[in-house]
Length: 349
Image 1 (cartoon, rainbow, N blue to C red):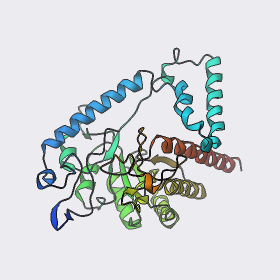
Image 2 (image 1 turned 180 degrees about the vertical axis):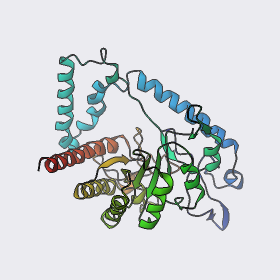
Image 3 (image 1 turned 90 degrees about the vertical axis):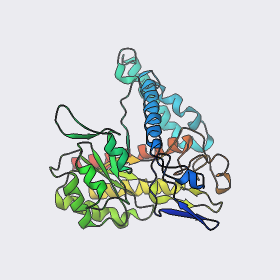
């Protein structure tokens, strides 16, 4: 939530017009401008990233405790979106939410009497990519004497850095935070079993989250075999779907983008496979912004390749805009409803 400052790259250098410079690795390391000075790593930028993150989180705390998160505001959050003609399918659901909130208020469950309805606890998560930064913020918990990563609540290991004998795995297995592990198409069953054993040797529930990121159309090729490996090991994991990183393409206009329809399809495939396997889809991972950007194509506002340049603000990965995020929230709600019905039916039989 406080910005993506460290950026994983497949190549260590970049070539433009015959000039080779170090790759841009995110604002916590260097700058985007293609100059020798900008691309030179600067350790002071770690302090800048920390300061900006702290300021952002303090602002979010003020919003979350100051009434912005009041559940009775939910209808106003979706009002502009559901009034759109193309979003008519979601209007009924928004109205049902509003009716339920009116019933709660009539029953005396108001924000004034029940503070939990007007505030929210939030937790932060990011890829623990830059180990120099992660190690600097690692602390010993005074009550348990164990190490805790102080950079965020849940930290995850990326698809590029999940080598069982790698430094990122070694760091993450030594801290007490909940840990996430990205699982892509190249994740083997053998590696997954080793990683689960290393990262969660006591098999504690809630310690390890497996973040599936395969790309639309490929979930069925990979997720079932990983689910089987988890079942075979009797491992406690939380299954999460990252529908963003496997669906990144280069548009005809030259911009890096993500088609909304592909993001949606991967979410639907994720839920469908978990229903078939009788396992629990425990979470979703999206990259989004409240701004009206044009970085991902599609959605009810129909962002096209030609419109990407209108408000393309990201220096890292393309994000869903406010309208696309709300549409996805409604669609995830429908998937959850279907999953609950399936589970209830199985329990009844």
